[in-house]
Amino acid sequence: MRENRGRAGEGPKQRRGSALVEFAIVLPVLAILILGALDLGRGIMVQHALQEAAHASCRVYSVRDSTQQDAADMVADAMTRAAVAEYATTYDPPSKGDIDTHMEAVTVTVTTPFSTVAWLPPLYLSGATITGSCTLPADLGVANDTPPAVDLSIDDHGGDGNMRHGDDDD
Image (cartoon, rainbow, N blue to C red):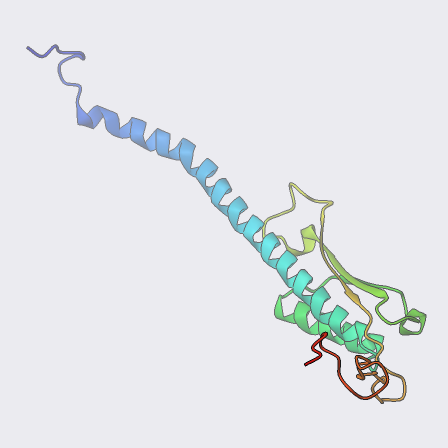
C-alpha cells in the first residue's frame, strides 16, 4: 500500500513555483559558463591567428631578398583577417642587416592584450597577453645568385682510370 507523504491537496500545482525558482538560480550560472567558454574559444582562435601570422612573417623575414616591411605586411594582413586591431610585433635580430650568417636563427613574435580581443568585460585575465612566435633559420642564399660549386667526382679508382670492385683476378 502506498503511503501518503504530503497533505491532501498538494500536487503538481504547488510545485510550479519551485521549478521557476530553481530555473532562476541555475540560469545565470549556466549563462556565465557558456559565455566564458565562448570567450575562451575566441582567445584560442586569436592565439592560433597570432601563431600563423608569426610563422608567415618569419618565413618572409628569413629570406635574403625580403625587407622587414614585407614581414610586417604579412602580420598586418593576418591581423586584419582575424579582427585583431591592437598588436605588437618584435623581430630578432631587430633588423635585416643584423642577419650575417646563413642558417642564423630568426624569430618573429606577435602579441596582443587579451582584454582587446575578449568579448566579455575583462573581469578575469585582464593583464594577460596572447602570444604567437616562430623561429626559423635565415636563408641568405648565395650573394651573386650562382649556386655554390659542388664536387661530384668520386675518387674510387686509384688513379689509373680502372674501377676496383674487389680482388677478382680471373
